[in-house]
Structures are given as C-alpha cells and as structure tokens.
Image (cartoon, rainbow, N blue to C red):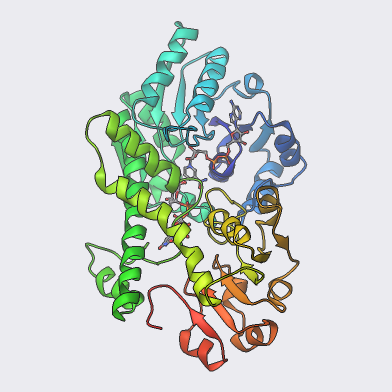
Length: 435
Ligand code: NAD
Ligand code: UGA
C-alpha cells in the first residue's frame, strides 16, 4: 500500500514516519525545499523524541521518502493526506484554510485512478465538503472520496500517541474509502484500538470538541488553583480528590501559567467562531479563551510580587521557553506573553531552554540567552520556572540557592517540593498550593 503525506511538519512527519513503520510506503511532500533537503540528508527539522530513529530506519528500508514534487509522489498512491497548517486567521480567529485549499487544488491536478483524500489537518466543519468541491471544479472526471481523519497526538510524546491512540476517528460516507482507511490502520485495528466511523461533519467537530474539552479542564483547574491560594487549600489534592472519580478523570488537571501550543489556543478560538456563526454560541469555550488569555498576563504580577513589587533593574532567570517540555515548538507559548512584559517593565531577562532558544531568539531578541540553567541563574534576583523540562525538575534546591543572587523562586509548573525549597532557604511561590 502506498500513501502520500502533504506537509512534513509535526503532524505530517510523525504520521508519515509511523505509517511507514506499519509497513506502508509513504512519500512525504513539502513545499519547503530546505526542509525536504534536510530530511533527505537525515536531518530532522523538529525536535520530537524518537522521531530521528524512526525516520532514519524507515528511509533506509525504502518505505519513507521525501520530495517537493507532488505529481511524481502521487504515482500509485491509494490515499493522500493533507497535513498542512491551519493557523488562526489574522483578525477574526477563524482557521485559515488557505493552505488546505491550496493543497486540494494541487492534488486535483495529479489524480489518475480512484484516490482517497484525507484531511488530517484540524479543519472546521464543512471543510471536507469544500475540499471535494474544489477537486470537482478542477477535475470533474476524477474518482475520489474525501475522508476526515483528525489527529490526536501530543507534541513531545507524538510517536507513542500515534502508535497507541485511545481511538481513531474516521469520517466518510463510502464503504470504498472506509476499506482503504481500515487497511491503512490495520496494525492498530489488530491491537483493538477503537475506531469511530462517522460522517464528515461529525468527525471534523470531534477534533475541536476534544481539544476544547481538554482546554476547559485545564482552565477549570487553573481557576480552582487561584481559589486554593485565597482559601489555603492545595490544588493537587483537589485535582486528585476529584480526578479519582472516573467520570472526571485525573489527566489534564495540572495547574500552570495557562495552556499554549500550536493547537489549544487556535482551536478553541476557531470553535467559538464556528459556533457563533451557526447561531449556537459556546459560551463556556468563550470564557475559556478569555480566562486563559488573562491568566498568561496575570503571571507577570507573580514575579513582580515575588521581587518586592517592581522588576525594574532586577535580573530574572527564566528556565523553559517552549509551551511544554520535549518540543522545540514556541507557538503561543506563555513565555511569549510573560517575557516581553517583564522586559517592558525594566527587568533584565536571562533565559535557558534545552530546545526552544533558536525560535525564541527570533521572537524575543532582547532576552539574554544562556548556555545552561546554571548560567541563567547565576547572580539573578529571581528564578522563574516556566516549562517543566526534566533537567529543571532535577535541580537541587541548595544548588539553586547557591547560584541565585537573591533566594527567590517562582515556579509556575509546581515541580519543586515547597518544604524542600524552604529548607534550602529559598522564598518559594508556586501555583495553587498553601504558602
Ligand atoms: P506545521 O506548521 O508544523 O507543518 C505544516 C507543513 O505543511 C509545513 O512544513 C509547510 O511547509 C507544509 N505545507 C503547507 N502547504 C503545503 C503544500 N501546499 N504542499 C506541501 N507542503 C505544504 O503544522 P503542524 O503542527 O504539523 O499542524 C498541521 C495540522 O495538524 C494543523 O491543522 C494542526 O492543527 C493539526 N494538528 C497538529 C498537532 C500538533 O501537535 N502540532 C496535533 C494534532 C493536529
Ligand atoms: C494537544 C492535545 O493534547 C492533543 O491531543 C492534540 O492532538 C493536539 O493538542 C493538537 O490538536 O495539536 P499539545 O498541544 O501537543 O497536544 O500538548 P498538551 O500536552 O495537550 O499541552 C497543551 C498545553 O496545555 C501546554 O501548554 C501544557 O503545558 C498545558 N497543560 C496541559 C496544562 O497546563 N495542564 C495540564 O494538565 C495539561
């Protein structure tokens, strides 16, 4: 079986490499010639644990190839996946579908025999039908079906998420397309992964509903954390106490500086817009968007308070810049809201992140980027922990105390033990835990 993957980004590259690991022949096509050259030469353009080995092994085995030439790649393919970006459209928050529709037009020009066209990108309800219309406009003679197959992987654990998903969602109306998708996902079928077959619109909505529900869970626990601080309760005990109820579940109840990343912020916003236009407003998600935006900004005052009310002239050591650990992705990271405000208020910011500094440097050139966590902390007036990379979790509180100029730590991911921090002589602020 052969498939084509259009877009060799986080989702396209991981999905392509994983399908090839299943034994499928995969041709990944990207319009970014530098990215394709890197991949052909064995350089992986994104940081994702395990991806380099998977790409190398399957390329060597001849099952995974990379090119900029869609027409050549399409020869003999039974399915073509659209895995291009769907960022927020400037101004109105709708998903920008220009990359998806452009890919549809390019596919149309290459179709020969019956082909399944799969949207793996996260796309609003109605997009699959529009993709079918575009293809019919260009090629009225073409034989094809459009399938919605949203992706639920998380960055940082993408390969495991793809290989062992909780479920696969497939939205299509024809048995012929269903059969192609079943054959493609056969290895997961064999390990009894539930497959949810639906219509196109339902499948498209499942993806937005899933991301928005998870974002709501995080926002809920963040607001409970704020309440915990006011009343002297511990948010982790609250999360455990409610999460052990199977109807609630323990996951995604970890408080922090607000959710970021390439998906929750843009997908919650896009769902709000879809719902408003359909005259079925999702007020709960509107509140989630507003609460999360405000939360990122409000994190600045935690730092200001910790250093005595004013950051002017103070040096803040920031550990972690990416929106979560084990990725180099900076998209909508809380750091992009917090650091510029600290700089505006006159702070000097010294930062370290294991993978995110290349991109961070482009977006925040006024930050002083350091070679290590220890280098960032040396002599600083405050340590601000923003992303819970393992190497930061492992720091010894006594070493932190020895390195800092002033013994002040603001931990927005709750990775340290408050008693140990205090025992080391540090003034420690975390999220939703008693002072
Ligand atoms: P990305 O920006 O990392 O990658 C997109 C790639 O598509 C880029 O390399 C770009 O050059 C390429 N591209 C765009 N138009 C093209 C065209 N016409 N032909 C060939 N290549 C083209 O994006 P991503 O993070 O992989 O996200 C892709 C989609 O998957 C989005 O809709 C996103 O919401 C969804 N998604 C992302 C994740 C995630 O963890 N990043 C998880 C689930 C779903
Ligand atoms: C998320 C979803 O988890 C995936 O299922 C989905 O496929 C993906 O979006 C997508 O559609 O792109 P991802 O953004 O990679 O995956 O990462 P998450 O682990 O979900 O974290 C998102 C944000 O929420 C991060 O900023 C993280 O720090 C924050 N978060 C997560 C919390 O603050 N608390 C939690 O308990 C969990």
